[in-house]
Amino acid sequence: MRKTPIRHQLLWSLLVPLVSIFLYIKFGYRYKKAKNLPIYVPAREQEKLTDIANKAGPEMASYAQELYQLLFTLSKDYQHSCNLDSE
Image 1: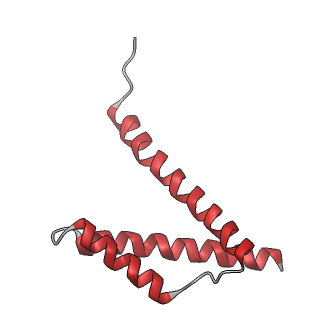
Image 2: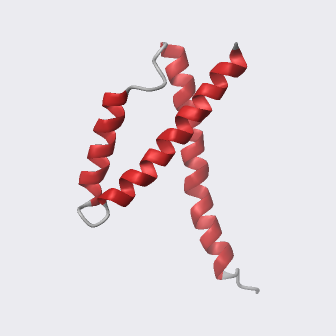
């Protein structure tokens, strides 16, 4: 039996969470649209970033915030593009 190369295992271990994140973004947009909620609420985003930093701990706080800020930006871009497509 042939072993799966480690690079394929690593790629797969990164791919599954990313697909989950993008599905979450997609369903989040649908939920917001159905409830007529805004795409961006600055106070809520800041609250989430603070919570993420606290959970990550002092050593990783800035990295975790940067990662999540990127995810929030991708999410907002996706949601805005969906709004443009539906007009």
